[in-house]
Amino acid sequence: MIVKQVDHLLTLFELFAQEKRPMTMTQLSGALGLPKSSTHNLIETLSTRGYLYEVRQRGGFYPSRKLLATGEAIAVGDPVTALINEFLGKMAYETGETALLASQVKDDVIYLAVAESRQSIRYSAEVGSRRPVYATSGGKAILSTFRGQELHEALQGIKFADLRENTISDQDTLKKRIEEGLSQGFFLNLSEYTPDVTGIGVPIEVEGRQLGLSVAGPNYRMEGRYPEFAKCLHKTADEIVKALQSAGLSARYPYKSQ
Image (cartoon, rainbow, N blue to C red; front, side, top):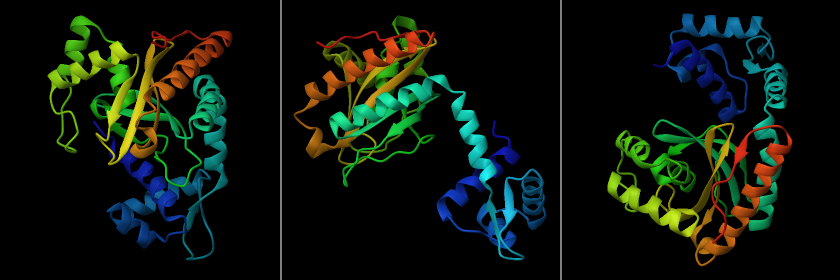
């Protein structure tokens, strides 16, 4: 169940992130689809708490630096993502492609960390963005950690959508792809969500939570290089697990390179 007030708040900040400019009460009300009275109450609350300020009289509102400071303070307390970010950056540099860490949320994966490729043509994704679990390499990697009845129940609960011609649309095909991935030691997304993009992923377990570690890039750079990318993924996963364990966290990597 979505809490409307929280949804409006998050939409407001996402709107500023997209527009990157001050906006008036009227503009915000129209963009959010809210009555002016509700928009006024939202802005008044955020302004009182120091998260919004009026750039000049009737010149529109914009988020203050307090939002950034609060986010940075929260990030400092996240030992897992902060540590893994370093390894994602290294993997993106070594492979030349975008490196991602994902967690499953119902039928989707949500990206917890992203290190984008430095190449002009690359796969782009934002932290917090979601993708269907069955249409991503990281999602398949996460599902591969389930066994027997647990896997059956996980697949039963997935609602498939007809996204693209290559997208998996039924449980049997998804299970077959997972079995193929288990056999080869890595999991593939062959343009199943984003056109002309290939993803390769493996699972890691952190504090009892299954995560998907992957790299993704345009097909023309990925094709024919799966073993190379898989080798880098295996090495990075091992390094991440050792670093997390050294930090006193529970972590495990179930697969080794073939």
